[in-house]
Amino acid sequence: MQSNAALEYDYSLAKKFTFLTILFGFLGMLVGTIIAAQMAFPELNYLLGEYGTFSRLRPIHTNTVVFGFTVSGIFATWFYLGQRVLKVSIAESKFLMVLGNIQFWLYFVGALAATVSLLLGYSTSKEYAQYEWPFDIVVVLIWVLWGVSIMGLIGIRREKALYISVWYYLACFLGVAMLYLFNNMEIPTYFVSGGLGDPLHSVSMYAGTNDALVQWWYGHNAVAFGFTVPIVGMIYYFLPKESGQAIYSYKLSLLSFWGLMFVYLWAGSHHLLWSTVPDWMQTMGSAFSVVLILPSWGSAINMLLTMKGEWNQLTDNPLIKFMVLASTFYMLSTIEGPIQAVKSVNAIAHFTDWIPGHVHDGVLGWVVFMIMAAIFHMVPRMFKREIYSKKLMEAQFWLQTTAVVLYFTSMWIAGITQGMMWRAVDEYGNLMYSFIDTVTVLHPYYAIRALSGVLYLTGFIMFAYNIIKTMTSGRELTEEPQFRTPMA
Amino acid sequence: MGISEIQGYASFVMTIFLVIMLYGYIMYLYRSEKRGERDYEKYGNIALDDEITSTPVEDKAASQRHKEENK
Ligand code: HEM
Image (cartoon, rainbow over all chains, first blue to last red; front, side):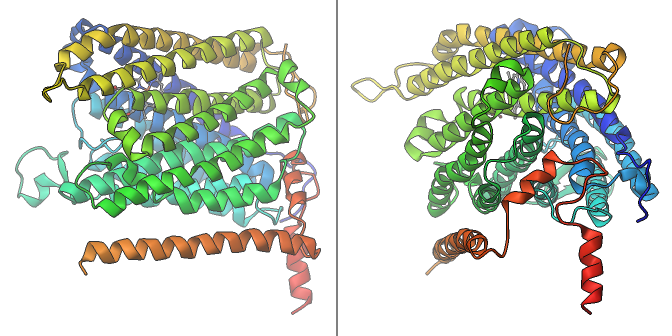
């Protein structure tokens, strides 16, 4: 590669995916807030005929936040930091640019079409794998394009050593590829039956307990390779860069990486405790879930120690605040998960609201906070403008933090109450409560969660407004800030 | 011995094997630093000094040249 004086990083792809992150984030959380309200006030199910029911909207919520919001965030940050840590501009290769653009459009159109298909009721009924087979094929294509793009960029890099974040993105790519393919093995019934039924319909290639095992090996590792691995990859770049402090211990980051890779894949069966899967597998799921605390906390503590001696930044830079809160919530949910995976605790927690409570302290506190922080860091550099409003950022931070706390505390109480009521028996061994008793008791907590959804969504709208104002009317920067992001 | 029992034992053996590998890796990391063969902490600077014009922490072009010279 020739060295060229005017060489610059090309952010066009990162910008495009940033827009999608905001769009899908808004849509996904809007639907999340609607379904939360429906659980508190069931009449809301009947506003839009079949299209507005909880059962139609729930998969739209989960798939939009996972495959829409989070995956766009992963792509956006990759196309930004991938170039920077490899010290190569993606524009140095025409091929990679074209590939990236194809990936973007295929992804955008595919994601919209897949969402519409869910709204119309096409679903395989496997959690987080609801998309029917034609969409699965599109997902695989997009993923292959991204893979080629990662490898291509690595191929033309100037920096020989792969920074730890790159390892995490690579693991995300490989992990999701493997999981998605195996769990979505399905047979389109129309074609094998000689034209019976709906062409979009398919059945899983696995049956019964095997299907459940593959499903939760997938489901849990979707959390691992979608909500954990790439997000850790982000924080390993954005926190050091924003604070100007190198990672506290690079060795610990390597070790946590391999620890996470080794342990995560075995923990999925904790979703199937007390079910028909073999006993040893359940025990293995529990045991590995507990061990998982180590690599998870390894990364989180490494991040907090990176701030050692620099804690003043926490008070005067809201971006640091977002990231420190994110790693704190990462610690919270990675201690909570293992607790829920202990068999005796799981006997109470399973099927209750404690599970969505756990999911959302992770995703709202960790995933969304980290992705928003990444966007706050990237946008001023991509658009060469100062962040529009620091005050708005602070207000958003506190509003959303309150919302997360309301969400998980209400669901903890609701879940444990529910679990205890389901099991309660009188002196003769008869169940003390019927199902509707629990529903009545839980109503206030559902209402609190709906409120927390409104608050969180409001915070996200503040975020989107701040970012769009930054892009269009933030004060222009003459040179790129090295560390701390400037804000008005 | 049924298939599920074999699977159980296999999973146990595999766990032990992987634990040993992981501990081996820790020792490898620290030992190679102690002997001065590697410096892992310098890689942390890749994120801090990431302008396209910055000097790479490990230059790919230079190391390739080096390899060719040694051929
Ligand atoms: C405004 C914010 C949000 C609200 C109000 C909300 C609300 C909800 C509700 C009511 C459910 C259904 C729970 C049930 O069936 O009992 C749910 C499920 C879920 N949500 Fe959200 N959500 C929000 C944001 C997010 C985000 C940002 C993510 C991921 C990035 C996410 C991931 C999930 C997942 C994975 C599930 C399935 C949980 C399970 O099956 O246990 N949510 N959400």
